[in-house]
Length: 247
Image (cartoon, rainbow, N blue to C red):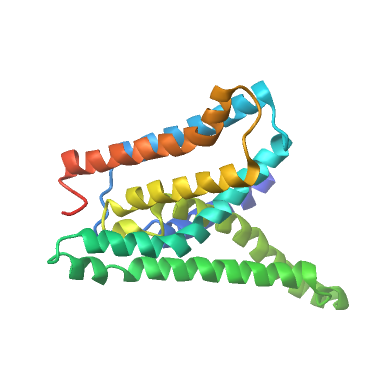
């Protein structure tokens, strides 16, 4: 199909750029395909469980509300990581042996650059969206000048929007490439962040519909499963790769 000729190269370029910036190799990172596969399986099962609970017991917000909530959490996660991540990282480094702290601090440049790239992505995307939708600049152009201005702006928006969401997904997984500092850091940060988000969900939207067990699964199934997976990941780092939180 002709549209695939444009969509496939575009999707590949977006994926390559997002992975290169927000899922970097090197430093203290340990590549474990088994952990990656289990994380993907947990994510798929989590989505299926959410859909099953929705279709069984419904929701006050409807399916669209659930989708908006998921998108909101995807956007909220990087913000919480930027705000709360430094505290967790500082405590993590403080807990490490004194002789390892200089090495861990020397690796902080990669996470900081990753934060900078993400903030720049948000700023550029917001600026382009405002230029295209919030101003009359393009409305005052006609003919070839409108084409010259609108096509690049539209192209960047179409590229940056999926890039932004894919970058947010990578950041939620890699915690701004903090594995570059220490392989165990993303798992530790993930546990902290997932429970902070759970508190936001409880205080913000309250209890979902359905029986008590369905309410419990809807509110705490995600945080508990992520916590269990993170603890298993830490155990696998220790037993299979010889990496400990203090090591």
